[in-house]
Length: 312
Length: 222
Image: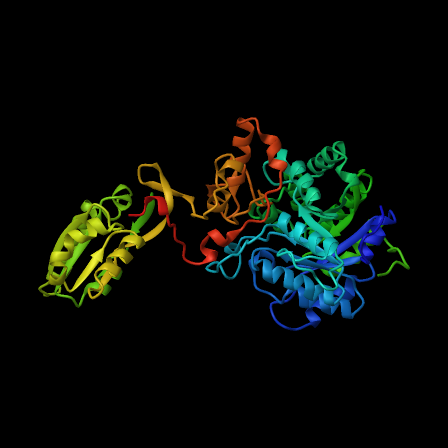
């Protein structure tokens, strides 16, 4: 595929490499080192780093400022943007702000409901939804226009991504929903954490049956378990997460001190298996507050070294 | 209908404790149907307040009335000749009725006796749930007759989100996922392929966002 933006991530995917992205959650404070320290640990092992946008509706240092910190250290950021907290004025304004720092990747999300976070009594906005945010960024980039129709001077140049959760219900609309995001203009997808490999492979197969894998780059999402407790928590408490019993059993079956290693092993095995799936174009490694393990996962997953000489 | 809930008695007492003569005004419409502010509830509240004032050793006179509607001049006018007898009115109508009462009787304090909740339906006896947020631009024709604005916690026009689990919403296991309902009904209507049509960005100017709204019908004006 040809490229449309200066994004390094896009270039790597277009060149046919398996891409590797990861993510960092910003701190609940203003210390920039909380970001740069995490980024420093993983920057040579990934092509771009997502910065989450007040994930789980807990107030944190903003995604845009965090992305700027990454940019300053020469790391390619992916700006995550949820439609929960900002109306179309603020969304477009922040997109321009990001573009002014030459941030070239954006991930369009609706965002968790605020009831899960630190401000359950707050309002939500949802002026537009994630699919409409995809349309918005594409309009701004491709036509150089605001939603209101006016011209944008120096439009944003962003590679447009979105999330997909193959495991949420109802399953039958998961591929149609992907098709809908593609129709809206999405160019890459990062999926929800994959533990149920059969179901994920079925989803990719159904996407392939419609030729969708040739219209969008799908990056498979993986998250290593730190413990059997985390596996159980993800299975039972996190909406839209599918952790099969045998995975929980496998984590519980090893002594506590070896569970972290078991979690990494499962993650590496997942990558090795999914690398072979037609339509999977890379991996999105979400090592939640466990960034130091990303290099090991990337290396053992056979994804290291990262392609050299590809830049904005 | 407009669904309301009775306010806690403590809050009501706090509003009216310093008055000597009160009128409790119910409404015969929505709040009667949802059993929050009809004749029956007026009577119960009046008794509770009388008891309270008696225990406090206060002599407070409480009258009761239930109007056909509190959102119409015609019925509100029925108490004009006696409104001046009262130090305050406790209206058990919805927020519309309370305000219309306050507008009409400008020099009489009016307090709300219910919390107005939403526009909804009676699912079963004692259970009411939201169906409409009055966005001013109905999209039910495109969503299989189920409103994602009032029934999806994120009011997603292109849902469901990734939190839809076994037909339920991520914020509450007792809440149906509106998009699951939409999809089920699209299938029932043999219109499932319409799911892939992208719902365009909504013009919210006909909703609350556009400021207080007004409908003027020249054809029916006097």
